[in-house]
Length: 283
Image (cartoon, rainbow, N blue to C red; front, side):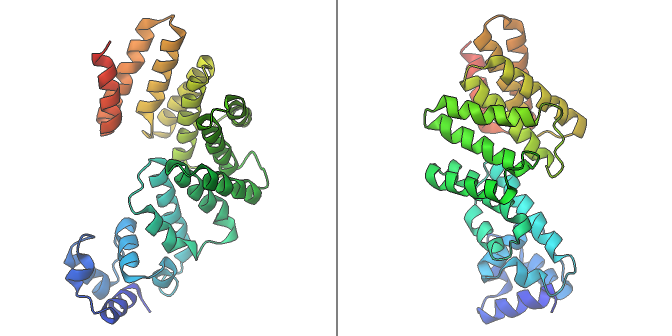
């Protein structure tokens, strides 16, 4: 069976027209091309179609693609990217589509996604539970990105619970692992930059200004080397806040604050732009 046949048969079994299936997801022509020509749409669109038809990604990939596992890994990476960017639209539905097909190799990533998602949802107990699963899966390997990401969210949890010493412990553990360089074998660029950005934010809240400036500058350097723009506005803002706390270089503070502001504009990060703009106006 091919993708088009799977979609067509399932749609007909549910008595849906192509327009019914496309409504709010894509246009009718996309459904037609999928069914007639086995065209694979963008992953976000495919996820929504599968959810509407009560299909798993395994249902649509396993029979027609020899690269089905790679497709599933790509979908998991896309879900993680959305969660790191705090874009949680329909995230539970997306996770439910891949959950049944996760193999042991990808379980640490899946549990991390669950862990940080529950943190964003303020379910700290569930978040901590999922992060413990990550650490068990990675066997406390500090050269594994998901060990470090689990430590990071644990630090965020402890900071939120007003346990700064415990938060600082996990930050130091991560910093020790990143001391030589930011290149971690199984890490994606967005994960490295999320680590740097979040560490900088935590260090600022812990009043460890030099550490905040150092890790944020390392993140900016890494982003420039890899031609990435994730969190550039927030990395610069971390530096600005740390400099403000130090109170010894107002010119540098203003420079990084303005870079953060214009970076937020270029990234269409409207909520963050307004936050920095408000501070600029209240100077």
